Length: 94
Image 1 (cartoon, rainbow, N blue to C red):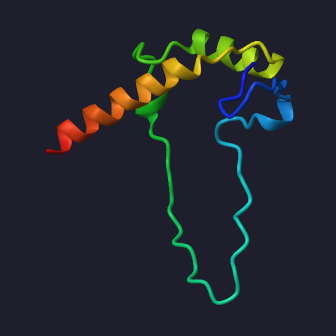
Image 2: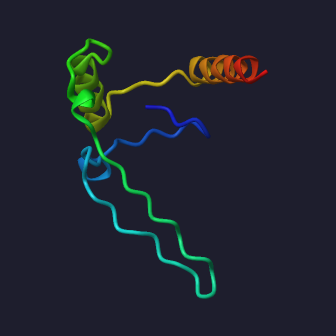
C-alpha cells in the first residue's frame, strides 16, 4: 500500500478499524473553550433497506483488504475523482 504523502508502505491493523455504530469517546475540551454542541444521530429502518445502492459484498471485500494490507490506492485517480466531485458541487451551488 502506498501512502499519499510518500512511498512508505504500512499494513493496517484491525485495531485501527472501527465497526459502524461503535461509540467513540468525546474529545477533551480545552479550559475556557466553548462547550461542543451535542448532536443526536439515529439510524432509521430505511438505512437497513437492501435497495442495492450499496454492494455489501464489495464493502466487506474492501474492508478485508484494508485489514490485510492488500488495498492499493492510486493517488492520481483519487485526486481526479475528488476534483471532479468538487467541480460538480460548485456547479450545483451556482
